[in-house]
Length: 194
Image 1 (cartoon, helix red, strand yellow):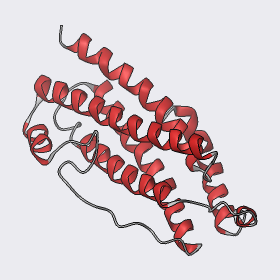
Image 2 (spheres, rainbow, N blue to C red; image 1 turned 135 degrees about the vertical axis):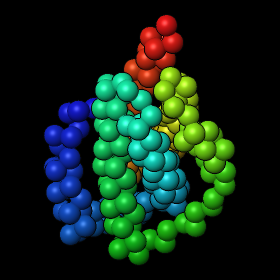
Image 3 (cartoon, rainbow, N blue to C red; image 1 turned 120 degrees about the horizontal axis):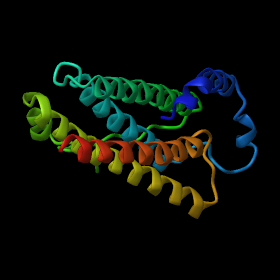
């Protein structure tokens, strides 16, 4: 998430509280539901996806001497935590409105862009330059998966002519921010390999 996003996080939080107090009731006046099952499944899957990025980021500080890399991993973890909080609040809002949350299936890996248990073990066992390469390649793959999920959600919204409350903004942020982060990580892969 771009640094500027952190500046308006409190505004989003206030907006979430306002929404929970009843603002989206206006949406109930027409026949469009606040969220569809697909919207809620997107939120659930993206939360699980983000949680893995947070876990991957926690490995960095003890496995590299690159201060820039440690700072970046901390930034990724904070940004993902903020988006997890937003998505969790949207799921809670849906539940409070009486919308049933879909059952979440699990697999290994559970969805596109997530590392398997074996890949995570390899990452945990690596160190130094080998760890840096594995982590950057893994996080690029991870971000590409998140972008793919966000694009699918965005296209579904466009096809249906819907703008689900806060999800429409979230998917745009994920696409824009993670594309920029991928460019940074690809540059580091090139530079650090020399």
